[in-house]
Length: 304
Image (cartoon, rainbow, N blue to C red):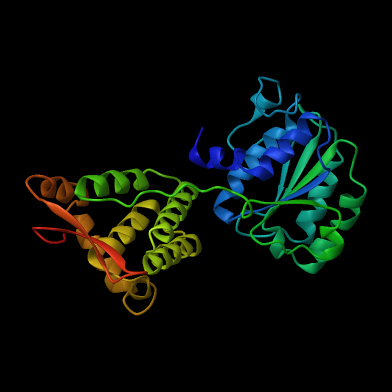
């Protein structure tokens, strides 16, 4: 099980829904509020819960075995994770929801980016949320709780922003730990990268490194908006800590210069440079300033 799945499953929101599911009391319309990077995982985990014959989402029933990634014969998606559905998409989903399930006890319609629905699209969902088909349910995925009031009143809403424990991730000390973290980051999916940056931010906040926490959070937001790949995020994170390149530099006038600079590092094989510096170098950790000071890691041979 991935870290993202574990994070969603252990949330108070998911546990409440699972308990209702096991008691046969699943709400016919449910909304989850969380950062967009978690929406795919939420869709999969909630979808398994709703479509499972036993209500657990974890058995070997025919429905559980029918999953193929985020696809399932009884799952109907409207929109995409970064784009809300239009009124025609919503009407099509509603019509599909009235069809008989293929392998599950019911069918599940998913409204992506529901907090950005147009008013006509949102209004088109009022009737089906008030009078759902007997074997149909709807999942709304949102980054913010912004459904229109008449729709919100028909939906059971959960938030992963509230009451969720997020364990801090210790900051790297020395080249060996940097090499390990950056190697792991480059193999992660976007959602796992997002969660890792959130955990690093939490660690900085707990250590009083307010400035660095803000920098990492800005990097996280840029990676979501700009769809940066995990390798680029890893390079930027290293640049923040080791080279002192601020997110303002990255996101404003020095954006192209920063890309070129990091591309040069990658051309010299970043991993090999780390491994070469591991031999014989002694590293120290120091903090600049007091509360909100930046933690830096320097080697006797200097930065890359």
